[in-house]
Image (cartoon, rainbow, N blue to C red; front, side, top):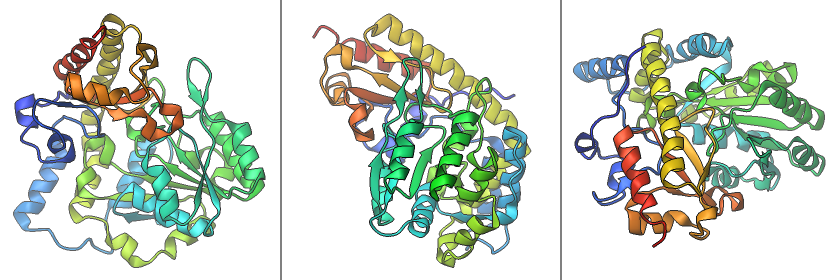
Length: 384
């Protein structure tokens, strides 16, 4: 295991990505899902070799990406997907849209489970379908799929579900039993399940992660997974994702996609993803998970000490915290006041659905120092 520490703020402010260019330098940016860590050494080395060679052309028709992901999934999740049943594309969002376009007809309804990643609503519309909202159930201790609500939606004609697992923004890893029940429901009603598993490598070891396609035969018949190294290894700008199936019938959907869908895969994204999925990067990923575990616990402690009215549950996966700020009385969009007065940028909770009104999403994939300063700035608003 490597020690993975965030870069200092002075270096981070030299970055030119969205996180570091959206707001002025007096704002601490904890909104978008980019992390503040250096790249895994194997990725840096692979990209540097490509630069030295001028290896910046089109992606090849045969690459090691599929085999690299299959080996990664077997090591990390105990699942051995078949590389011959995968195809690449530019990113997870593009993969979702291309699949939904082919498993739904214009105007059909696709279930989403809010509060959920805001682009899901737009991706369903881009695919020509309509959103059917079935919110997660809050049990008081965790969030879970509302299987009765999903059954009712399928029974009423919804033809697909866009699953988020691990779930963004709550960090929930849906358990095997719930996923198996979902697969059985989809098979019963002839619906498709498109599973966004971009945060899967970031599941904490104590929780583990179950790929949707691994849960049972029904899941393999109805399911599509879209995966990427981009969130765990901070590679979103390099553009590479995989669409994964586990059955010849579902693979036929991928096989029949226009070749341009595959050609949109970025050459540097592919090179970086192969390095990320390699065994050489496992110690870095283990170190990252340890750092994120420390940060999620630190955040809990900071909120208890400085913002005791806020409600927060430790996420099972990822580096995104879903914080209920309603008890503080800061209105439907507390992130607006926090940005204006505390100079901390969070993601507005209502963007994730009506269920997020009064919430904010915070990115703790940063240093303890930045995280601490951010919460102290926010806490200074109490009583103003």
